[in-house]
Image (tube, rainbow, N blue to C red):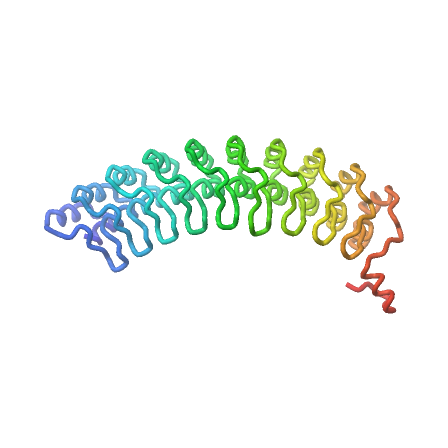
Amino acid sequence: MNTGSQEGHTDIVKLLLEKNLNIDLCSNDDCSPLNMASQEGHTDIVKLLLEKNPNIDLYKNDGCSPLYKACQNGHTDIVKLLLEKNLNIDLCNNDGCSPLNTASQEGHTDIVKLLLEKNPNIDLCNNDGCSPLNMASQEGHTDIVKLLLEKNLNIDLCNNDGCSPLNMASQEGHTDIVKLLLEKNPNIDLCDNIYGCSPLYKACQNGHTDIVKLLLEKNPNIDLCNNDGCSPLNMASQEGHTDIVKLLLEKNLNIDLCNNDGCSPLNTASQEGHTDIVKLLLEKNPNIDLCNNDGCSPLNMASQERHTDIVKLLLEKNPNIDLCDNIWIQSSEHGMSEWAY
């Protein structure tokens, strides 16, 4: 029976079901005929098996029930058949993943619709702390996010890394999903607990200009830094995202906010050779001689990296031309004649 159900041999399954057999007899990996047929998408066989009232929630050794397998693999007609029975809609596999969670992750919109009609636990998270909304937001399944948001869910429910749905969508560049989430007034400044990055920071880091625009309309903490003390402006300046730097500079931010290494946005952009960003920053009258923890000024960094156009721009602002870094000073004091790098 198990073999026939797995391979899709409908006529053979019919013949076997005429005999007095154990409908729930499992294979060595605890897989029942119903489980195998649901996994493989054999709708007619599932119909036949369900007429014999099998254990609808019988799961294999990985914890996956027939409903879970059908949801995971996108077998909508089988999901419909199974949902007509009195089953456990929230039965999770060994990874704590529910049928709704896996359907949301895999992007099976029609199946998500069917499951939501049965009032599952909308915020049920897997072992990684990911809710269905978190998974759909991360994977970019806009239509599923819409469906989930119609329910009364926790918009700020974070996974084990402290990432909210907004954080994940902002990081991955899913603009339409960010729009949908922002309509529900999430915590705009909620940071992950690994690196301390906000949604705005991640969008700036990854160059998602349209998402940065959307987030800035919600008045986030523009200077909210990650665990390295790096602000959104500093990160955008480092990565060379000129359009994002323009957007950020339109807000009332701290132009000289330094990271834990003492690097200001101007210092970072000068080091990385982002000429257009240096131009933008200089229009905001930053501290032209603000040095990092090694005592390196923006002019020092641009000169060292041979960014001639940036050196020209900096010299127009009359920096301290003789400002030396701490390492050079220490090297000179010890009688060394070359850079100590």
